[in-house]
Amino acid sequence: MARIGLIICILVISLLLDQTSSHTSKLKSRKHSKRRVKEKDGDLKSQVEKLWREVNALKEIQALQTVCLRGTKFHKKCYLASEGLKHFHEANEDCISKGGTLVVPRNSDETNALRDYGKRSLPGVNDFWLGINDMATEGKFLDVNGLAVSFLNWDRAQPNGGKRENCVLFSQSAQGKWSDEACRSSKRYICEFTIP
Ligand SMILES: [Ca+2]
Image (tube, rainbow, N blue to C red; front, side):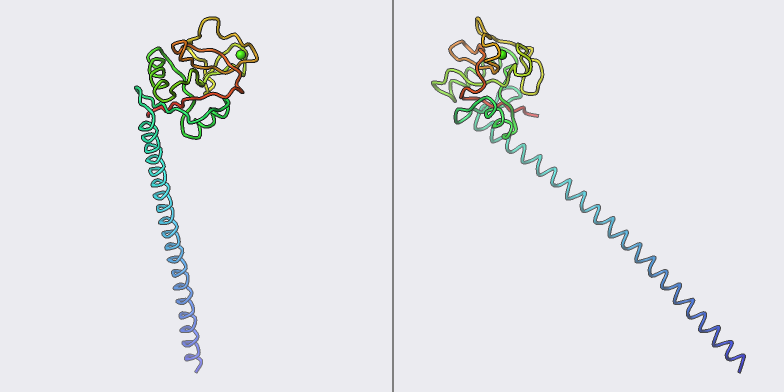
């Protein structure tokens, strides 16, 4: 009887051990599959993020194409004239919200392109804002990105407004020459968009 008891006891212990080990291996495989699911989730997430980036890049290209079609294209830039009058800051913000900046002619070719486009898109308008100002330091004219402007095209006796006039206008009657003006004046403007 004692032997049978011993055998039963050994059987029970071995059964228990077997169950425990199978439970552990089940847990292990569950952990593995959880990890696999996590990895799959990560892959999907990065794929979705990549697709979003591509969609946004396409949206930007499409927006730029729309701007170039509505406005005009010159070399690696597109120009788009404003609908209404705005203070310098509002005009600047409007251009930024469209993905561009207030226009800055960098040479005489761009000046001529702007004269032509200005006459066509803003008929009867003599002057419009450029993305140039000396708000930070009087007499030191910077573009809207805060960089010094190397091409300067001042009209005779300009700039002459000192601290009262810190923003710059493009003048059609002065053949595209510049003058300084109070930034709070309401003027038409042209936004510039760089083609990547
Ligand atoms: Ca000034």
